[in-house]
Image (cartoon, rainbow, N blue to C red; front, side, top):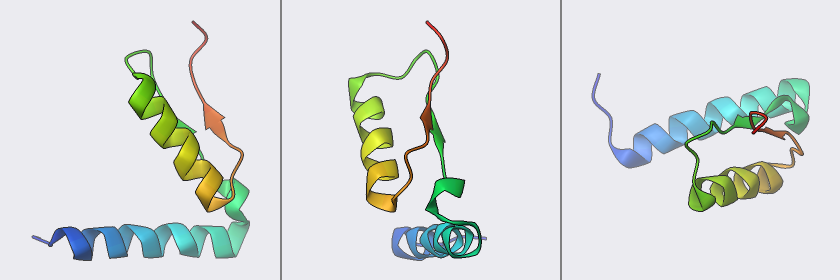
Length: 61
């Protein structure tokens, strides 16, 4: 199934909002692996903060 960027982001956003509505924003988390760079880390933290979730995780280094 093909989708435009707008359709894809709307679908993903709708699913994330449904999860947050059903289970609280803290049910959303991000995980960044060892290969994450500073931009990816910043984006993951910003996403969780904007969504209202304090849950970010990373492997022990």
